[in-house]
Amino acid sequence: MSAAAPSAALLEAPRPAINPWIVAPIVATAAFMEVLDTTIVNVALPHIAGSMSTTIDQSTWVLTSYLLANAIVLPLNGFMVSVFGRKRYFMGCMAVFTISSLLCGLAPSYPILLLMRVIQGLGGGGLQPGAQSIMRDSFPLKRIGTAMAVYGIVVVVGPVLGPLLGGFITDNASWRWCFFINVPIGIVTLILLQMVLHDPPGMKRIDLRHSGIDFVGLSLLAIGLASLQIMLDRGEDADWFSSNLICGLAIAAVLGLVLFFVWEWYHKHPIVDLRLLENRNFGFATLGMLLFGMVLYSTTTLLPLLSQTLIGYDAQTAGWVLAPGGMVVFCMMPLVGFLVPRVATRWLVTFGVLVNAFALVLMGRLSLETDFHHLAWCRTVQGLGLAFLFVPFNTAAFAYLSRDQLSSAAGIINLTRNIGGSIGIALAEVFIRRVSQQHQVFLAANATTLNPAYNQQMSALQGAMVHAGISPADAVNNAHAIIYNTITSHAGMLAYVDAFHLLAWMFLLVIPVALVLKTPNFKGKQRPVAVE
Image: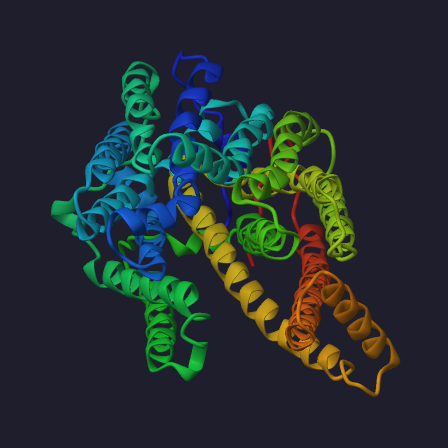
């Protein structure tokens, strides 16, 4: 099957008179608040559980409920924009997000908090793809790299700042202010959006009286994504497929998503335009963003966990480990946006992959004696590589799409990145737990009286404790406990090292994807691209 994809020159239609550098910061602020809310309450969960009389495990639904609602709305962006108009839909999402944030902070009970988080996720789901398509549409084609750089700062830096800001707010005020902080910013952003935002000229609208709503597709999407997200979030705690619940969710996820794909592909008025994946650049860039999300989010999760569980940092210090990487991304994104029209996409992405792989190899050399500066340096190198991935991938993805396809494409590619992140985090947690057990068995096998090193260590520990006034019997038990904790810690560190090495090899799979991407011609008219 082949079709002609729109030339990039088709995107150069008349634009509103508003300067794009006025529009971009405003819509980026809206998206930034949404991205921030995916992680800002992470460190506040124990406080929420305590004040709401619930368990820590139950409190994680504050995160899961938001992500579930968010995932369902993301791919519907193109449809919703076609029904309500871009300005009305984006401002409506911002209004729902702001009001629900207020209600989250005021929630008197845990069930009400969960309900408000679902509504907040539904409103926030339209902000990321909406901001991306608006910024892409506001800048001329030769500045598309700049537009994607601005958006990239939001997506990459937001999740890093979330735990830092959430920890500071929770320690110095209340967890409720993690939600209240959105309200004044949301109100100001809404006022500014009303002033600067416009629907694109000639935007196509859907008349629901004639086309109707694809309720079958919407239901299959909701079932598939909800089942997948819950399975990934709860799988490790439920011991994965030994649990009937997880098995049922896996079956529902596979059936729901497969049937959704088939139904939408052949439906006359699909709620999600999956045929955009026929476009070569968009299809491969979406695949690249899936892999990108897996490595980015899994690494962002593993480093703070390692810092807290093995090295002994508190939550705020562990968050600061990620901060240098975010600052590097913030500084490098404009430079990458400048390079995008001047350097072939495949070489920019390949460079970014190699730098990321090198950073993961550096992480694979961590030990229990690693200091803060070494951890921060690893994240700094990774931040350099991330900047060279996000901008070129998104630029290549949107280069051969028409103006009417931007909203749908933004929803699909953002959903793909988030799903990749969920899969990456789940697989990383499984890997760490299983591999650390294997290392522990191997190390414990050497902790016997037949090992001279073990005997020497036991004697030294017992002697030190007896000298400190501990009875000989207690000294033996304490020495065993110390050695066991040492074995457990080293086994955990070895598991993290193996995980980082595995992620480095996985990231290299992005290079073949990068090599097939076509570099947009930013200076002249492009020939339509045949889609295989």
